[in-house]
Length: 376
Image 1 (cartoon, one colour):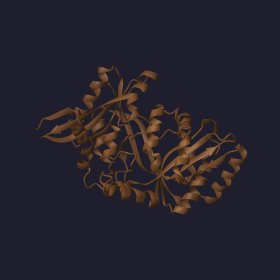
Image 2: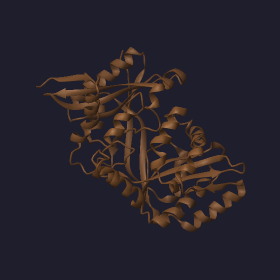
Image 3: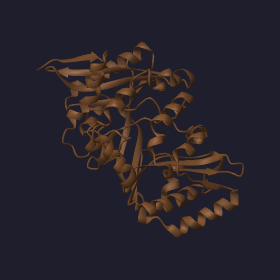
Image 4: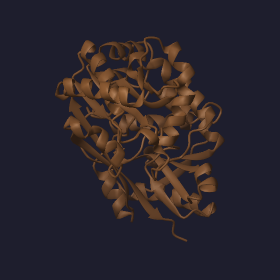
C-alpha cells in the first residue's frame, strides 16, 4: 500500500495547488460549482483578507503516489477563542478522495494544532466566520451547488463519523417557486406593518447609493445573529473587504432595507442572482470568457439566492419581513424570476423559520458541521 504523506502549504505554487485540487476531484460532476481561482487564492492571503487580523490558518495537502489526494485548512479564530472563550479548533476547505486514511492524516494534523494551542474540540467543515461557507453536505447531492456553499461527495460524512466525529449543527437549504408567493397577502400586510410601526422600504437603482448604508446594515446583522451559537462578530475591516469584493457585483435592486421613522435601518436583505451555471462555464477563470458568463447571469438569471436577511430583535416577530418580500415581489415580477433559493440556515433558528413559513418551502439539501473533542 502506498504511503500517504502530508505537506504544509508554504509557497504560492502550493497554495494554487490547494485551490485547484477540487477541480480534479469533481471533474465532470454536474453539481459542483467551482470558485474563481484568483478570488479563492486572495481569500487565503493575510495581506488581502482582513479576517487574518483576528484569525490564523495553516493549509495542508495530502499526497499519495506523488498525487494530491486531500486538503484541509486548520483555522483558529482568536476572537472566538480569547473573547468568547470558545476553545474551538476549526477546519474547512476539507476535500479528499474516498480513502479513510487520507481523511485521518488530515484530521490528525488539525488535532495536533489544536493541542498546541490548548483548545478543547474541533469543528468543521467551517470557515473563518459567519460569512464563509459551512458544513458538509449530507443530503441533496443531486442538486447544483451555489457560489456560497461547499459541495462534496457522499462519503465525506462517512469518513468523519468513522473518525469519531458527531453532529454539531445541522443546516437546511430550502427553495420555493416565486409564483407560489401570495401577492395580495404580502401587499396588504406590508401596508399594515408600515403604518403600524412607521416604517418604510428603501430601494436602490445604483450601487453607489448603497455604500453609505453598509456599515449600518452590518450593525443590524450583528444584532440579529448575535444569539446564534455560530456567531462571531464581523470587524470593520472585514465589512470594508466585503463592500469592496461583493457589493459592486450585486444587483442594486436586489438589496433591500427597511427604515424606521428616524431613517435608521431596522431590517435588510441581500439577494443575488444564481451564478452557479455561470461559474461552471467559467471553470475558475474570469478571463477571457468567465466574466461574460457572470455578467450574463447577473442580468438574465431566472433564479435568485437569498444570501443574507436580518431584522433588529426589537422588530422581530412583528411581520417586518413582509415589507422586504413585497418589494422583492415587485422586482422579481419585472425580471421574470422563477426559483428562490435560500442559503443554509440552522435547523434550530426559529426566527428565520417563521419568516419563511408561508412560502411552502421545500428542503432540498441538508448539511452538517461535525465535532470531536481534542484527544490529549
